[in-house]
Amino acid sequence: MPGPHHARDAKVPGGINIKAELALELQGDAFPATRYSVISAARSANPAERSQAIDTITTFYWKPVYKYVRLRWNVDLDNARDFTQDFFLRLIEKDFLGSYDPVKGRLRAFLRTCVDRMFLNQSRDAHRLKRGGTLAQQALDFDEAEQELSKGAQKVDSPEDYFEKEWVRTLFAQAVEQLRVECESAGKNLHFQVFAGYDLDDSDPKPSYANLAARFNLSVTDVTNYLAFARREFRRCVLEKLRVMTGSEEEFCREAQSLLGVQPK
Amino acid sequence: MNTTKWRWLSDQIISQLQAGVQFPDLTGTRYRAVRFLARGGMGTVWLAEDTVLGRTVAVKILEVDFTTGELMARLQREAMVLARLEHPGIVPVHDAGTLPDGKAFYCMKYVQGQTLDQSLPSTLRERLRLLQRIAEPLAFAHSRGIIHRDLKPANIMVGPFGEVLIMDWGIAKIGRDALRWSGTSAAITAESDSLPKEPSVPEVPATAHGKILGTPGYMSPEQARGDSDQIDERTDVYALGAILKFLLAGDLSKKESNLKPLYAICEKAMAEQPGRRYSSVQELSDDVEKYLRGDPITAYPEGVIERTLRLYARHRTAVVLVLAYLMMRILFILFSRR
Image (cartoon, rainbow over all chains, first blue to last red; front, side, top):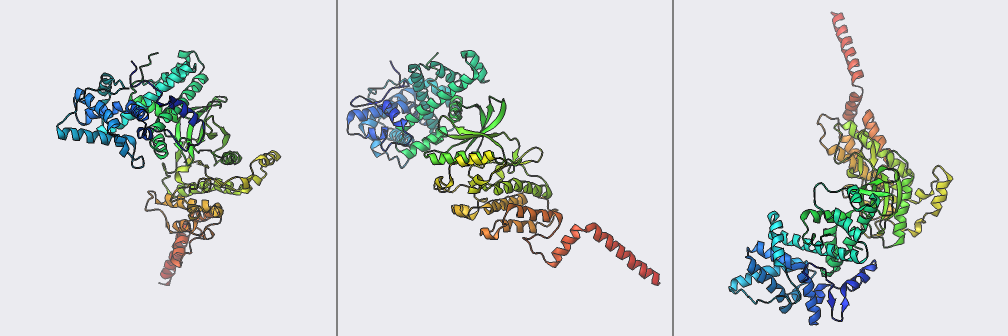
């Protein structure tokens, strides 16, 4: 069963592959006049398109939401699971995103506010909605999220900061997975392995280029070039995902600058 | 390979990925990026290894969205002109080109030292000598028609032996004369002819980007207004005056000499109207030299008392000897009359 962390190509009705469209869009230097964004798709009159957008948002945000609720509101595991599922169901049913204005703030800040409000409302009403339902297209691996929470929660400054960090972590993990899949299908497995051996290795001391060259039977120059290729592609993957997950070009550029230190062309 | 390994990325890996994507892509060049060094006005500077010559160099990558060929040509020309500014006080440019992602880069000598804002000489005399050493390469660049436009302590590197290097010529204004001068060989003139002609190249960056570049506090009024026609060597005179002010402000002993003339030099160098400033950095440097020698300076009309004190300070030994001689003569006359 594919987990939520697996890369998936978001599809809008009619079977158009969003990733392929994005790739086409990104071939040009300038921003296109129109852009695919989950924000606009989530407001679409078409239920399938709306559902697909929520599915994408869920992929990126369910873990940050789950972990945030656990930390911020000190909710036990079962209630946090129910709340998380409920939150994303309500995103669809209650059209939460209808009131989101990209000009006023970032999507994740808006979602976090929605989480807080929904939680407070439920607490106030003393009415915890337990539907027992799950999101139709998402299989949320809460056990995995719980394990991750135990790894990362020790260094939490604030639940809000943690939410931000978890969003970045999810975004990067999705981008890494996309890169792996793309490298595999393009016959560039070794490029990905060099990238994984260097940038995805947090051991101390860090392997040198010479170590990697010896490990993969490459020259140091090849390691440099493979790494440069993979990093370039990784950046593209992050930017693609970021672009989908932001509501405006300004927000996209701001996020790209803040996350990657780059001004996307 | 375990594909689930990066489902959860540690904070360390996130930082590595963020640093990694900012690493310049030097594929296809002879350079290998080693580490980040600094961020300048238009780009980032990286320590790199020249894999052909096996030496350490600095690679400056211009972080500008090159949407027009004209701007790219302008930046390449800038690198070419700077490469010809052969002066010990100007960082030599070895190479220039374009990276796979379309960004232009220079490769230059890797300079070790501290910038002026990080380390100041302790005595006034040393600071003034330093200022004069800053003026030398500037005067040289001006003679070649190049105006730095971003002079500030952070862009002045002081080496371990007190050598001065002016850095970050990224927003320098390159006048027509910069391409016209013939240099030392006919080859340079021939190459200059192949460079993009000035009229077809947009001004960098004030009009090209529609914004003003420079550093407040060191930026002349005409530069702050974006009045590129008015920018000439007096723009750098203004910045040099601001640097002198910076040098005078930093932790000087109260026992140091009269600083008023030096502040007068600052005032003249930083006059609102370019016409009221020193006409060249050399002229400013000459005034500093006069101050150091104890001579009157052009920027500071002194009164009788100040002149007397200055002359006394300059000829202290002689004055003391003369006074002692006179005293002895007087005493001798007085005693001989008894």
